[in-house]
Image (cartoon, rainbow, N blue to C red; front, side, top):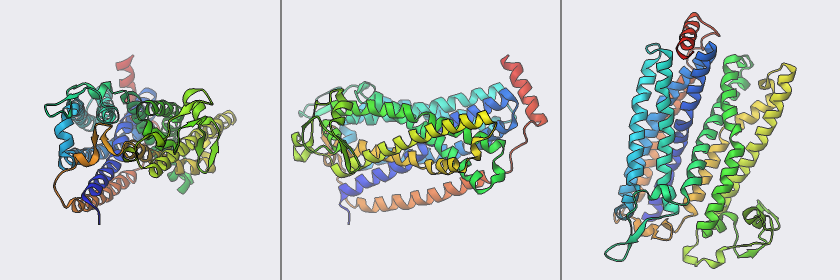
Amino acid sequence: MLDDLTAAREQMAFSLGFHIIFAVLGVGMPWLMLWAEWRGFRTGDGRWTALARRWSKAVAVLFAVGAVSGTVLSVEFGLLWPEFMARFGSAFGISFTLESFAFFLEAIFLALYLYGWDRLSPRAHLLCGIPVAVSGVASALFVTTANAWMNGPVGLVEGPDGELVSTEPLGPFLAPTTGPQVVHMVLAAFLCTGLAVAAVYAVAMLRDPAKRDGYHRRGFAAGAVMGLGLAVPQALVGDWASRVVAEYQPAKFAAMEGLEHTTDGAPFSIGPWEIPNLLSLLLTFDPNARITGLDVVPPADRPPVAITHLAFQVMIGIGVALIALGAYAAWAWYRDHRRGAHVTDRRGLLIAMAAAGPAPFVALLAGWIVTEVGRQPWIVYQVMRTPEALTSQTGLETYFYVTIVVYLALSVALVAILRRIAAGPHPAPDRTPETRDRHRAFSDQWH
């Protein structure tokens, strides 16, 4: 039996976890789709165009699911946390308004893009896809600024009753946590998308060696380059984000590192092992620097340490593994390219890429656990506690279970649709007369 506070928090966590998976794919897939279309029209290679056509169908489905789950999240804010929205809703006004504009712009041009295949000129069709890709990133950016403000609120003044209220409409963009959190989220979207796409084609080639053809290799390569190529930049941004957390949310940082006591020359924990002085060195470039621990935080203000630390360790572990996989893939490609071989003939690499497909999503969810659980017991850091924001309505446990059932049904339908798209007709051959004509038209328009 869940109490109302736990039920409300679990419902938000479940809804966000469901939404974020499809939201990041909705951000990254349009860019892969545009890249494939551009390559197809630029080179006259029909396999790239076939990839773009198939991926455009997936983009449409992901957009629909993301819109539904995102709307549910917005409704849950008002239903479950009315006190929070009443006091601080003004801080989100401009972010949510801009996100709405980005959403409608994306919907309009996605419709034109899907309808425009073989109806618009190559240049016009490609240009219709650009607002789709840009708007997807903009939506993620605007929504993330709102969450960043909750971690580092600015623009607060005292209301008539002495409580702090938000008055700065640009607060979400001015919060010290906004920069690293937004960049970290956008890179995560591209990284997750790339590795998910690469994993799909890796699995296909493992199941059927006959599919190690030009079509599947191009799909695999596009996803692998996007995903693995961002592993190192994402690690660097993660380091930036950790430094900001250490400065503005020291309790969260201590929970992330599992640092119980303030320590000079703090060690860095990797699973059951500790490396002496490494945390101080990484954070301040001084191996003997003092790092604040949880002992200086009042017990009532401490976040849950075990789950925050575990989630942070999982995120770091996956990040290191992906960097290692990227280095191996680059070495394998260089060696095979010199010999005239294909890197996709390496069964071991295909297995590793298939396993890497879900890994960044696990890291993504772990990162959100660190962000949200590590902020507790505050819904707005050091301003408003989570229980203060809860609705007075009871029986929230029922809503939580209904949400699970609805989302499970939606997941089953989504998987069925995506499997049907994947099992569609075999792609067109390399250079059909239609592809040559569109390639010629594209070249004439752009040159």
